[in-house]
Length: 341
Image (cartoon, rainbow, N blue to C red):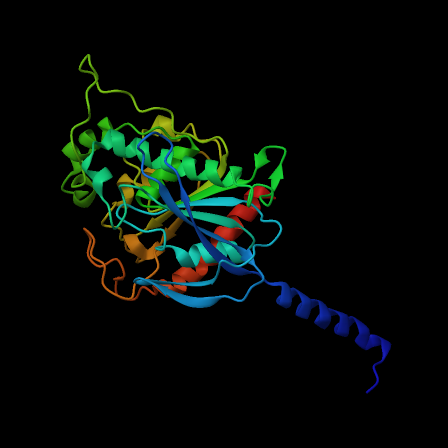
């Protein structure tokens, strides 16, 4: 067979396409355990998702599944580190499809299991709102500390003049967590004020109040410490718990923020939470997901998992969660690519 010169560009394009396809990353996975950041603090379990050239396979993990290459060798460099925070009572596996998509697009994702606020242990929810609001962002920052200091990973994470490229994604209470990392300051007194006025309209959120806040020796409630993490340079908050932030606090955020609202959210009613955040964060990128319930951003489970709003895998009639998650798997890497490039 012979080729004329006019065929050469087509041949080269075909070879290039073949090479790119061969180099396409899969998602690797490893589990790490991070010591607590204080004496007696519970260790933090996290899953690391990262780009690898090893072949992935579907692995059932309890009621969820992951399409990953377990313990595979990571690529030499990653675009950045993305912290992933699940919702209250959730699991580090609940957003695996999103973590995999970020890894396939070149990011290292650290999906933590929040101590005291996961499917096995809900003790943190029984403490005061002040303790709860403080612990979650501190746990997330502890994971960032550990990964950025880990000899296996620290030199793989892309850096620039601002330092390592770090972002965060969170759902529900995880959305609260990443907004706190971004610089919003929670004011737990707003919980009582909001629920005194709006309990009938926001009943699930208002049913989550834990113990009364601990009083200091003078009887005053200790202030919440600063929770912002200056290393975090962009966040995505999906159906976030937002009523505990004041408008002035949200207005202090100076990094790129994307907010996703589930239009039919009954767990965190949008006008009090996602829409409140979006109305007050400067330059926010707002995404409204039509006909979606609160758990639209989570992977579907193989067995029913109850929540205060029913089975987390249930959907409103006509909502295609798999199709929507496929869309989100493209949007999240694109958001961070835009921020970091």
